[in-house]
Length: 231
Image 1 (tube, helix red, strand yellow):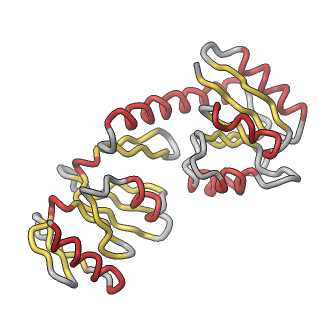
Image 2 (cartoon, one colour; image 1 turned 120 degrees about the vertical axis):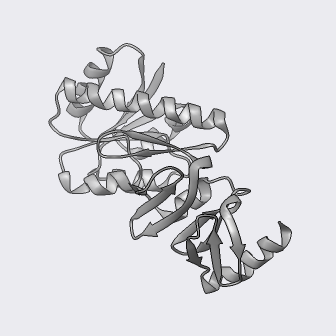
Image 3 (cartoon, one colour; image 1 turned 180 degrees about the vertical axis):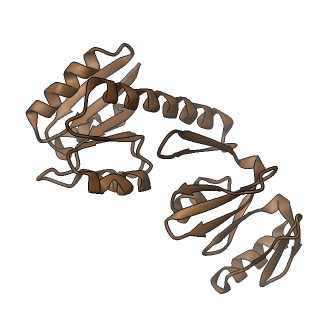
């Protein structure tokens, strides 16, 4: 059973979501709320949020960003300009009002996929990372990662056996927190490396076992050298 919490300041929009949810087996609507403040008591019980963006109390996007450990999110809004921001907070989907039942059903299928990947990730204790792309969910085995390169709002994830890196819309800070700390280290504002790929370590440069050379940022050198001293 997937437990949903719907948040929208328009009562008619909440009624439509309630009708759609009742048509799909395996879904439970915990509550319909007209503001994020009203939704607070239900957050810990929800597997996913259905959230409008433009609300008078607080912007739905800002509300999701404010949550320390948010449930999965499907945004429901009449404004297309927030779509990129939705992917930046790793939303499952972005439904533009008015949306049909079939469009809602497609979003729920994406949600089911993401929840399955999330459960698998929890069970594997850090061996996998899950991302949401425009078309599908993506699951990456962290044991295949050689290094990660930050490019503004995007990441290039360099993997064993792949000539081209995987590119995802994700923050460097977030992925640094999600990777197993005992196996990865951030050596630069733009680079995170897998420690078991290090061939040669210097104070200002790292050579990986495929001969890739990466710089160690000045502000990271002391912690990097200390880390090398403990290995």
